[in-house]
Structure formats: structure tokens, C-alpha cells
Image 1 (cartoon, rainbow, N blue to C red):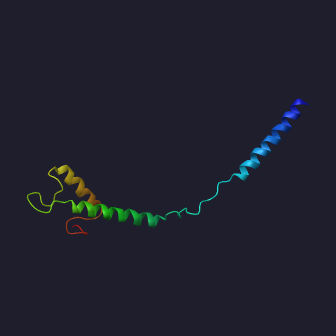
Image 2: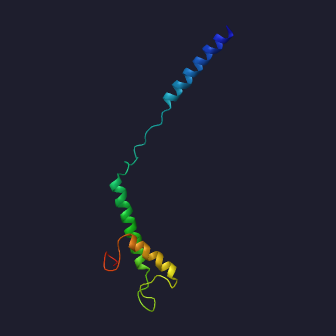
Image 3: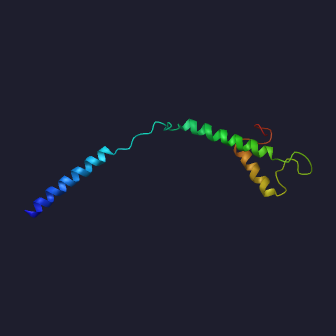
Length: 97
């Protein structure tokens, strides 16, 4: 008899908890942006890369003994060149070639 009473009480408790869970469903905000498509992601990455290369080009030494370099340390220059070449800008090709 005690087990039946405990079981019945448990069922009522469980039913009450489940009904509260249904009532507290989170509302969907109206300002959620649509997910980006694969093409849109590529466009954004390309635009960011172009902006970074423009900045890097603006920091290049324009005159003097180190013309065309970014720093007197050749490791820094090599990293900068890798950034340009990875985007297809090689000597004679691309915007910076």
C-alpha cells in the first residue's frame, strides 16, 4: 500500500515537472541571422584576406637599401612573401605581382 502511494505521488510529481518544462520553452529571438552559406563564407574570407594583404603592402619599405622588404630580418620578409604567394600573387601575377 505504501509502495502504491509513493508510486502515485511520483507519477504526479513527474507529470507536474514535465508540464512545467513544456511551459518554459525558450522563445526564439527575432534578430538571429540566417546561417552563412559556403559561398558566403568563402567571400568573407577572401575579402578579409585582401584587406590583410593591402595592409601588409602598405607596411612594405618603399625606398632605400631595403626597398621591397618589410624588415631587415629576412624571416619576417619570408613570412610576408608566403602570405602573398598563398593568395596567388607571384612575380608578374596578381595585384601585387
